[in-house]
Image 1 (tube, protein in one colour):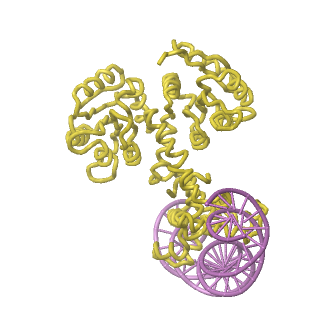
Image 2 (spheres, rainbow over the protein chains, first blue to last red):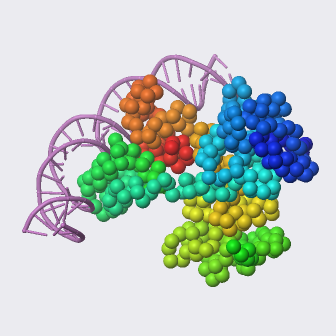
Image 3 (cartoon, helix red, strand yellow):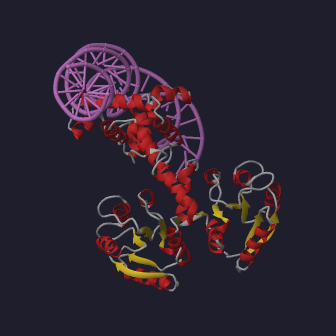
Length: 219
Length: 219
DNA sequence: CCCCGCCTCTGCCGAAAGGGGGAGGCTCCC
DNA sequence: GGGAGCCTCCCCCTTTCGGCAGAGGCGGGG
């Protein structure tokens, strides 16, 4: 495919940030900032008018915030601009917009302090249909992926044996198989399953399995 | 804090890769490759001996693979080396080691074709307790996170209706409940469940649920 | 046009799971 | 000593699943 210039629009309520980004991006031979906006409404209008390849959108802006911009442009509603990939930019990695932004179709999520390198890399990634997320944010996403919200807390509800049985249930084992595995009688397995079921509020063994998968007990 | 040199060990069965990485990394003033290994056993031994700041580990290596290395070094077993952050490197973004690696504590997941910039960025991120994942892989992670746009590959095996039923199975619904929800007869639900079961290789509905949770169809 | 895949439904039967109850042995702690 | 909690096992009964076999409607593609 032809390596034409990537057209970029910057949306941020701070002029200094916009100028900084523009300096960095225009220094790249294949990138070109074609527009700027200082608020959410302007970002949407500019994106719809210019249909750039990339929109860098601050999370916190007057009017529609970065998330709303992502939703509208990346959605399939009337105002969507499918050819524009939105990269969300934020100042603080504390903010909790990460999850919704990515879920709603952001092509990246960057910290302003990430530096020019990652900014350029994020744009190139987005142009390849990929997505770069700031390392400091990725590490939080991974924690969510990994350890589950509260493994120790939630799991404490079950006795050791019950958790063991629940794990095997989540693997798709029948009571008889679990019994063979743990060297106990099938009747005892039923007792443990029923107990786990009651404790986690499930209506059947699939609910127990679902709980095990959610909490990270099983994987 | 003092910006001392970051000590790095490279584990890859291809000497060319190791040399390439070494060239890139030693060109950085604050990075230093202090060791190499050509297989999993060597990687573990070298990491335990040198206790480097960073271990770049190929996924596919003779002996223990990159995942096993991550598990052993990042775990809390006797052979763990907590001060060493493991960045997993792979050739193909097709491979399905992404989830386990990140879940088991990898401080990054890179494609060899990502280029030197991301390699260096990934190391700096890992040193800050953060994690950089290759954009092409991130985009897959996000699909799993979103779970709305299907991971077409795995889910393509099931028809739309089957996937719908599988999702409800994963929520712990009985066939009758699914029937009521989808406005079809319980018998039809049984057909779909049985079909999904056969396609995903499960022996019962819990296996279908497990598959749904694994693939992100269910959350 | 006809075949194929998907969705829909039907029936039957044995196996598995779920709900209820009871019971003995064990450890830990008051 | 006496609970309390856990693990283990047993009974009975109903509901749900799982496997099997068949069949009609409906759409797309050869």
